[in-house]
Image (cartoon, rainbow, N blue to C red):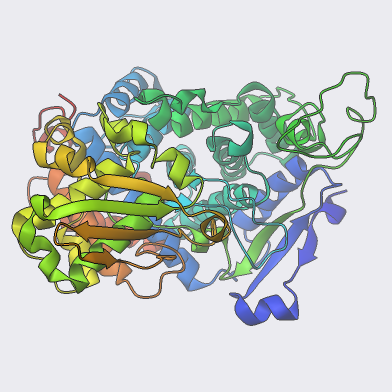
Length: 561
């Protein structure tokens, strides 16, 4: 079975011409993919495929991990609620063989530590993003969201074992991103109102188990438990004003995944072959026997015995083993704090200002209207007119009107615009303070929000997502002049953007967030340097990478009041 499941995949000649090079295994739809994922994770992390991962992949995951840590520790420094609560909770679960929360050397239960650290990483909604799209692999275009919230799983496993050096830790992070990223490419959870973190939870169970020496069968049991027992629906993020549950969704699901993996390693038998189980989410929502698969009409007729019988999963799953075309290479950076689907509008607005410096002369009063043309789902999610009155930070960072207003009013108040796109992204970068209690009701921001309108771009725009973030912006001045950005497809930070100086902008972001945490710039740079050179770290250095003197963190009031 395993030999059949782990078939080689190589792109066709046509695909190879346009794609990054890679080798891969395919888990066919008619195989036990849960068992296959477990075996893949073990083989990949243990080096069965050889040392064939391109250096650019290690560098990219190192950048994403550094970005996530700086997001997490700054969220703790500013006393955000969920990360603080979960950190304090974890510290009550002492475990001499466990892991450590950010800024502590006290060993605690690993699943509690992972929940705390993952919640911190996700709190700002500013770490990496995936849109579940790879044009180089047929069928890998489902377009599911996801975020780089799951690296604390690998770090906790490294601390528990004490045997994972920097290169192996990064390899495990690449593996985690590969599993969740490829699942996002083949199954759209959001289409069925399921939260996107399920794919990350599956990957977390697999990678945590592989690092701790679990068998492929034990990993299969853990994945089965995750999918059968712990499916979060998007009720956690419904409504105009969002709660801690939205930001901590990955943390809570991953806590359950690691707990499931630990139970499986103690002998608990979970549901097997979960991807082909007709009553698990995959075949329940996308039937492969007895009825057609439809996002509009899910046939759950109990009398349809074929519908609930033996059948394949809805997809083949291709997982890279070498080269440079890993899922992480298609993931996107956020160059500051914003919901990533607003990145096209931000790029358009910044370009409009850089190319038309006269725009700022009239200030807020000189602007008559700002119209954003966007695709679905951005138009419906963050372009919703109901979100023009956010009352919480979590709601503000999902309001395109608020996000756009914050960055525009920075320029309008300064009365000048930076001369290049890279300089503008750095100088205008949205920080946590742009969403704090004082910013939420800032008069100029609210005034500018009322001048923003949204238009659905229709089929032309919708067809270009998730390849890009198709957005355009038209700024109409009171003089009658219209400044148009044209369609933006690959904004700065996007995996297919080729113009931004990504390293320079991320270095600025790391310092911006680090200055919130540490007492001086030298300490910031030293800590970022440790993260950025993780590939060369010993196992003992990896185990202490999240440690710093929490008592010396800069003192702040809670950003949310």
